[in-house]
Length: 488
Ligand code: ZN
Image (cartoon, rainbow, N blue to C red; front, top):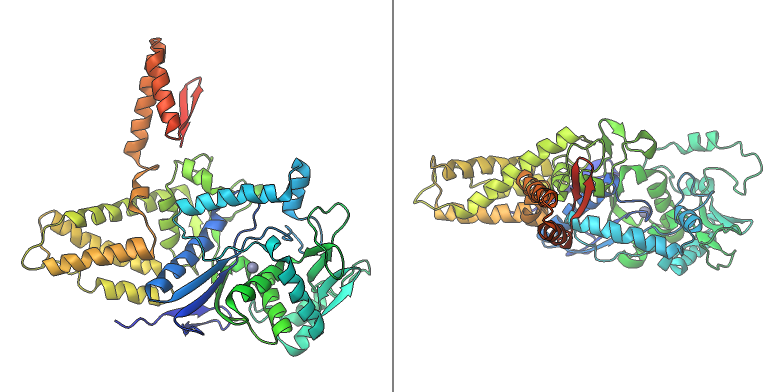
């Protein structure tokens, strides 16, 4: 079958045939995490979405260079042009070296990604490691006349840029409206217009992360790192730029403006954006009390969760929705997802043990083409999953002795299941059974109950042995007044 991948390009707002600039090489850039705070679902969705794209492109035979950056400098919570960097603030409050803060969160992020079976990208560049490239990029924009200096900081001149290019083309924002509503600066600001954004910011004396530049001792604006690192590793023009929908404005809009201003052309051919995640119908937010970290999902240690959820359940749940649809998390929805995943994996295990017959009475022959067609249609993973469930029914029919499958069909079915479940969707069988499995939890509870009984009988040797062995396996055990609590 000929593979004809079609992807939705946010820039043109339509599905387009995927034609790489330099086939078989493909350049893919995805905005990675801001290394601050614990990994949460908002991190998991783009990571899983673009992991599946990365996997599928490789399956189609492309040689993908996947760059996912680490924002470890200059990303400010509310306004990229004012205030204090989150990493710097935490470092200052806790008297840590800023890179200590970065390392701490980066390790946690990588661990969570590994558990979600997200493949590492080809290059994971840090913004703080590319200050020189960012300064060079600012110089190019200044030279082209689309930026100005003010009090040691450099700002992008949005109005001037918009006279030649189109600021707002990606997000569909109206620049005239933006300029109109932001005209009344009080004269206190260094910027000509509040829509202008910082390319380089002079550091205030208390700012602890700063570097020398031709303009001031300071730090780069947030949007700049992706323009600088994207073009450094993928070239001035590359194929795909991805990220969450929340980054479309201002981040990606500013990236386009920076690249057009510096290079005189668009850098990115296809823009892809994953939709957002809500929790029980609400936006995620610390103030709403519904901010659940990935670790809390894995341990079940959050009031909104009825139980722990295996990383594979989280992954499966995300893939059950199309990446351009919103996903609403709730404990009930995750429980349903977990049941579905267990059913699918049960069929996958049964498939390995089926005995072939002379002929097939179950219909599985078209599965590969159907799954390929769904993936080629803008990565329609929910349709792939529904085809796999249809095939699971056929497997169970044969397993129950109510149907037969030929040797050829069986071989093909095994190959297709392996390809789509493991290689493309990235679902790992062994990680499904662990952690959230009921029998497993009951077995641990049983062991700890036996330990409690031993303790009550003053059988310290047995009680200590159970505790020590479980601790060595990575469990944390806590005695409470009603009994015990444990976590892995
Ligand atoms: Zn970015």
